[in-house]
Length: 185
Image (cartoon, rainbow, N blue to C red):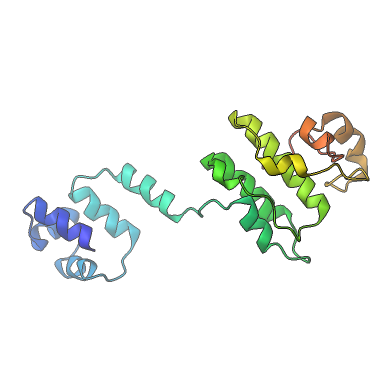
């Protein structure tokens, strides 16, 4: 842990003094500085002893362990014919909403993706871009409406509601979803 050594040295602290302030053993600190694995709670104690707030440490670590956002082209390339599209799809939606990174939607879905899913993704990307006040990626214009209406929920009793509630970008591609389709509930 080069950063701990550098910061400790910058403050003129010995390993023994830092270990005492952090409430960890001297031997544990030696091992951590040598690169041994440790618990996050131990690192939080050391960070606190070096003057970093526990809250900032936790927020930083939470961001470190988050999955990086995936671009449309990457998550669609991973889909297999037998795999359910919903989980990767909604993970993408969540990632884009968190990051707002326009590069995530810049490239089109993978070419082998079924037409239905390409239309669903294009409609979703346009809706997400509207939320962010961004322009649509060029490739969305090339995704045509489906020949037959598609109700992704597959629940017969919801079809009438989906016809009424479906957002404009979905309707224009003959896809009918509930207004809360892009929300995790």
